[in-house]
Amino acid sequence: MNVRMQRMRMIKNILNAQVIDSQEQLLGALRMQGIEVTQATLSRDLRDLRAEKKVMADGSSKYCVPANPVIEKRVLGMSSDLARLSIVSVDFCGQFAVVKTRPGYANAVAYDLDSRGSSLLLGTLAGDDTILLIPRETTTRDQLLDFLNRG
Image 1 (cartoon, rainbow, N blue to C red):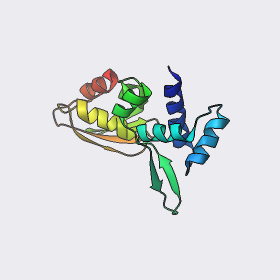
Image 2 (tube, helix red, strand yellow; image 1 turned 30 degrees about the vertical axis):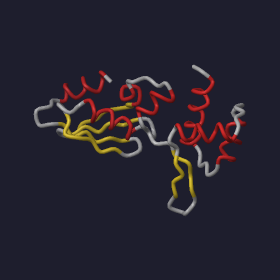
Image 3 (tube, rainbow, N blue to C red; image 1 turned 90 degrees about the vertical axis):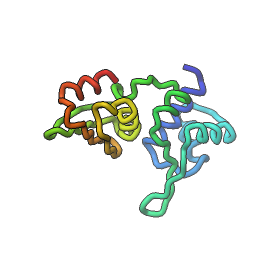
Image 4 (cartoon, rainbow, N blue to C red; image 1 turned 60 degrees about the vertical axis):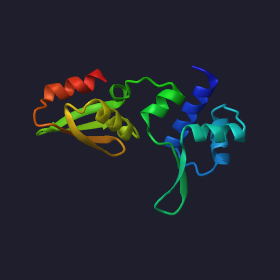
Protein backbone atom coordinates (compact mmCIF):
# COMPACT_ATOMS: atom_id res chain seq x y z
CA MET A 1 0.00 0.00 0.00
CA ASN A 2 1.41 3.39 -0.91
CA VAL A 3 2.08 6.24 1.51
CA ARG A 4 -0.92 8.28 0.37
CA MET A 5 -3.35 5.40 0.94
CA GLN A 6 -1.87 4.76 4.39
CA ARG A 7 -2.23 8.45 5.25
CA MET A 8 -5.82 8.56 3.94
CA ARG A 9 -6.77 5.51 6.01
CA MET A 10 -5.17 7.09 9.07
CA ILE A 11 -7.13 10.33 8.49
CA LYS A 12 -10.37 8.36 8.18
CA ASN A 13 -9.61 6.37 11.34
CA ILE A 14 -8.78 9.53 13.31
CA LEU A 15 -11.94 11.31 12.14
CA ASN A 16 -14.08 8.29 13.06
CA ALA A 17 -12.48 7.92 16.49
CA GLN A 18 -12.07 11.53 17.64
CA VAL A 19 -13.86 14.85 17.52
CA ILE A 20 -11.66 16.91 15.21
CA ASP A 21 -12.89 20.42 14.43
CA SER A 22 -9.96 21.94 12.52
CA GLN A 23 -7.27 20.98 10.08
CA GLU A 24 -4.66 22.12 12.61
CA GLN A 25 -6.05 19.69 15.16
CA LEU A 26 -6.01 16.90 12.54
CA LEU A 27 -2.40 17.76 11.61
CA GLY A 28 -1.50 17.37 15.30
CA ALA A 29 -3.28 14.02 15.54
CA LEU A 30 -1.44 12.82 12.43
CA ARG A 31 1.91 13.97 13.87
CA MET A 32 1.18 11.95 17.01
CA GLN A 33 0.86 8.92 14.71
CA GLY A 34 4.20 9.75 13.09
CA ILE A 35 2.73 11.18 9.90
CA GLU A 36 4.07 14.53 8.69
CA VAL A 37 1.99 16.25 6.03
CA THR A 38 1.53 19.81 4.80
CA GLN A 39 -1.72 21.69 5.28
CA ALA A 40 -2.22 21.83 1.49
CA THR A 41 -1.86 18.05 1.19
CA LEU A 42 -4.23 17.54 4.12
CA SER A 43 -6.80 19.80 2.44
CA ARG A 44 -6.58 17.71 -0.74
CA ASP A 45 -6.88 14.48 1.27
CA LEU A 46 -9.98 15.77 3.07
CA ARG A 47 -11.51 16.83 -0.25
CA ASP A 48 -10.79 13.43 -1.82
CA LEU A 49 -12.31 11.66 1.20
CA ARG A 50 -15.30 14.04 0.89
CA ALA A 51 -14.90 14.98 4.52
CA GLU A 52 -17.36 17.58 5.75
CA LYS A 53 -17.70 19.70 8.83
CA LYS A 54 -20.91 18.81 10.65
CA VAL A 55 -22.53 20.87 13.38
CA MET A 56 -23.10 18.81 16.52
CA ALA A 57 -26.14 19.08 18.83
CA ASP A 58 -24.18 21.28 21.25
CA GLY A 59 -23.26 23.75 18.49
CA SER A 60 -19.66 22.60 18.11
CA SER A 61 -18.42 21.22 14.80
CA LYS A 62 -16.64 18.05 13.75
CA TYR A 63 -15.09 16.70 10.56
CA CYS A 64 -16.93 13.61 9.30
CA VAL A 65 -16.09 11.21 6.51
CA PRO A 66 -19.16 9.70 4.87
CA ALA A 67 -19.17 5.94 4.47
CA ASN A 68 -19.16 5.43 0.72
CA PRO A 69 -17.94 2.17 -0.82
CA VAL A 70 -17.10 3.81 -4.16
CA ILE A 71 -14.84 6.40 -2.49
CA GLU A 72 -13.30 3.78 -0.22
CA LYS A 73 -12.43 1.52 -3.14
CA ARG A 74 -11.14 4.34 -5.40
CA VAL A 75 -9.31 6.44 -2.81
CA LEU A 76 -8.44 4.01 -0.04
CA GLY A 77 -8.01 0.88 -2.16
CA MET A 78 -10.40 -1.12 0.01
CA SER A 79 -11.80 -4.44 -1.15
CA SER A 80 -15.08 -4.49 -3.04
CA ASP A 81 -16.57 -7.01 -0.59
CA LEU A 82 -17.29 -4.27 1.91
CA ALA A 83 -20.45 -5.92 3.23
CA ARG A 84 -18.80 -9.26 4.00
CA LEU A 85 -15.85 -7.61 5.76
CA SER A 86 -17.97 -5.18 7.79
CA ILE A 87 -20.86 -7.36 8.99
CA VAL A 88 -20.53 -8.47 12.61
CA SER A 89 -23.80 -10.40 13.05
CA VAL A 90 -27.19 -11.16 11.52
CA ASP A 91 -30.35 -11.88 13.53
CA PHE A 92 -33.90 -12.45 12.34
CA CYS A 93 -37.21 -11.22 13.67
CA GLY A 94 -39.90 -12.87 11.59
CA GLN A 95 -39.21 -12.06 7.96
CA PHE A 96 -36.92 -9.10 8.78
CA ALA A 97 -33.18 -9.31 9.34
CA VAL A 98 -31.16 -7.05 11.62
CA VAL A 99 -27.54 -6.74 10.53
CA LYS A 100 -24.90 -5.39 12.92
CA THR A 101 -21.80 -3.83 11.32
CA ARG A 102 -18.59 -2.29 12.53
CA PRO A 103 -19.29 1.23 13.88
CA GLY A 104 -19.81 3.76 11.09
CA TYR A 105 -20.18 1.19 8.30
CA ALA A 106 -23.94 0.57 8.23
CA ASN A 107 -24.76 3.19 5.59
CA ALA A 108 -22.07 1.98 3.19
CA VAL A 109 -23.03 -1.66 3.68
CA ALA A 110 -26.75 -0.86 3.23
CA TYR A 111 -25.94 1.01 0.01
CA ASP A 112 -23.95 -1.99 -1.22
CA LEU A 113 -26.72 -4.45 -0.28
CA ASP A 114 -29.41 -2.30 -1.91
CA SER A 115 -27.43 -2.02 -5.14
CA ARG A 116 -26.79 -5.78 -5.38
CA GLY A 117 -29.91 -7.32 -3.85
CA SER A 118 -32.88 -5.94 -5.75
CA SER A 119 -34.23 -9.42 -6.49
CA LEU A 120 -34.14 -10.36 -2.78
CA LEU A 121 -34.67 -7.05 -0.97
CA LEU A 122 -37.36 -4.40 -0.96
CA GLY A 123 -34.91 -2.12 0.81
CA THR A 124 -32.80 -1.33 3.86
CA LEU A 125 -32.80 1.17 6.71
CA ALA A 126 -29.40 2.01 8.19
CA GLY A 127 -28.10 3.71 11.30
CA ASP A 128 -24.49 3.92 12.46
CA ASP A 129 -23.87 0.22 13.05
CA THR A 130 -27.26 -1.41 12.45
CA ILE A 131 -29.22 -2.20 9.27
CA LEU A 132 -32.81 -3.40 8.97
CA LEU A 133 -33.17 -5.60 5.88
CA ILE A 134 -36.66 -5.77 4.44
CA PRO A 135 -36.77 -8.82 2.17
CA ARG A 136 -39.31 -9.56 -0.53
CA GLU A 137 -42.10 -11.96 0.51
CA THR A 138 -40.57 -14.75 -1.58
CA THR A 139 -37.08 -14.40 -0.05
CA THR A 140 -36.14 -17.08 2.47
CA ARG A 141 -33.73 -16.74 5.39
CA ASP A 142 -31.31 -19.13 3.69
CA GLN A 143 -31.33 -17.02 0.51
CA LEU A 144 -30.71 -13.88 2.54
CA LEU A 145 -27.86 -15.47 4.54
CA ASP A 146 -26.31 -16.82 1.33
CA PHE A 147 -26.54 -13.34 -0.22
CA LEU A 148 -24.87 -11.73 2.83
CA ASN A 149 -22.10 -14.36 2.92
CA ARG A 150 -21.28 -13.87 -0.76
CA GLY A 151 -20.39 -10.24 -0.06
